[in-house]
Length: 404
Image (cartoon, rainbow, N blue to C red; front, side, top):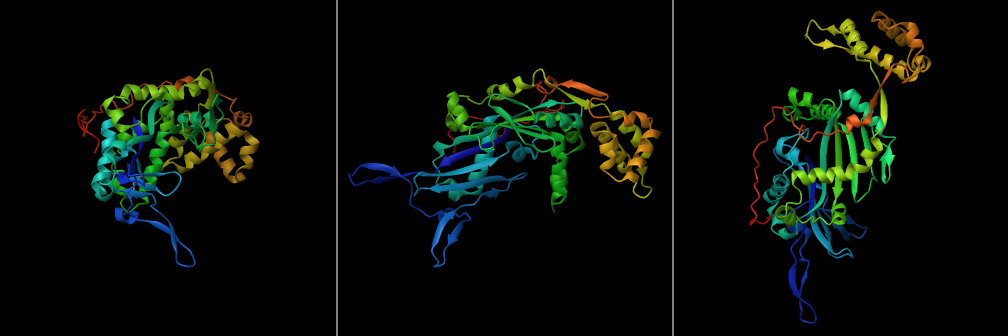
């Protein structure tokens, strides 16, 4: 799927006669304020204004917003004057990016139309023939057994590197590869279910959050369970080195970003990393039975609300996981003794002996070895739910129609 698009377009130049009476094209001499956009500026002690610029701004849509910014370097050595727009097409079109479209024309036109319709004063001054791709995020998913296994795999990835593809420090359930400021490519691997749950929690804090969360149906949340997302950000320079044009006109007319070619770009850009993962494995704890036994025995249902709480059971399970990972002594020292021994009693009542717990010294005890290759087997035909029917594209490319 196309997870992110970043486009740039120059402002239209005007004709001007130079000192030798030759006609040349130069940047138009109008103020940024004429574009009806908010501006930032600096004012010195004498009241002189300088450094006038346009901050990043959001254009709202039915679901998510699109960011845009005007970059004005007409009077600097850079000699450029352009607009940049960026958004997730999937979020613009359907409100989420658990899965999404791989139709480059339809995705692109959602962004361009939103700009033109919301900011006509800007759009009418653009040279639409110069629209070009600056960045594209191509994302495909593999599937783990569950979200916990996905998280363990991704955390293990943070120690992997191969050739020029080296890992960077990531958060829990997220791994990054490639330089942070790379102008070629970057790779992000993350657990989609975790991101979905965090998005729902973040929406809950919004005044209109309930409306946004209607998109996240139980079926959508279930589909995200166990998804390992491989997100590749490819920049204009990457395609320049491949000899692939980033002009939107060329992309549309020459079919440079068909679904099949998107898969090829993604495969080529992840090749080094996948080579590093082949033959490697990770160890995971097979502890789902213990977790379920604790929940069956210690979950409590409120007589007033009818809701079931698993807080006590899950707390004991975390202690069990700490013992298996760090050993008895470190786990005991990490919490109050009363909590530790209360959880110990609960575990014993669920069939885990004290002797077995005291002899656990980490992942080598009862761990299951899982090859990494399982998580890099991406089935391009299983990127959507089984009953999903792709909607017809809102924008159908016509070869004689220009981008405008």
